Image (cartoon, rainbow, N blue to C red; front, top):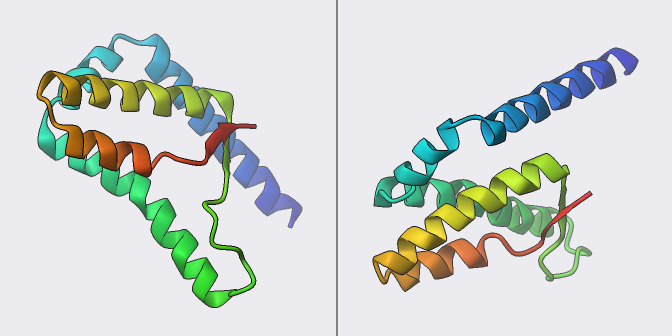
Length: 115
């Protein structure tokens, strides 16, 4: 078990470093521009919606879990990245008056918070 925990810790650390690089690099402008495309917006929402599907599956397996949306605790750097991506998409939605996509994004991001 200790080896598995060490591997998971190293993976988590590596992911956090990658997010940190993303936030500090110039590539986030590219991401903002990409999120103006409907296909990229659909992809972001589909990734976020996987959390909802997993929660529904868990409720079916273990009915004693209440129906409320649970909270997903994120590392601050991951949360900051998520906020950055969602903000870019929301800005694009506002410019295009695409309120349906903005609504889908917002409904799939409820319950995220930092650790």
